[in-house]
Length: 102
Image (cartoon, rainbow, N blue to C red; front, side):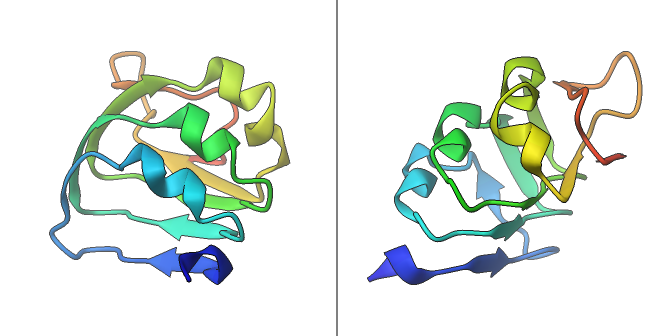
């Protein structure tokens, strides 16, 4: 049923907790926009890498962490937009391929 979803846009919705690894079951997903929420934990790069069609990933202004370096050398290099909290050397997200760092 959910495999045909192409986009999820839920900015500023007071979402809490981590992004579930089951996100990889949304096989048609092209865009995931979760900016300005209260999402925590590691960004599930392995699960997102399973999404062959994803081109837009907006995760900025949350409380997530992770290192996207290997992700950027694979799936992430094909992104049109990739936004995360990576604007300084002390940021919780290391993202060499982000198009926008907040």
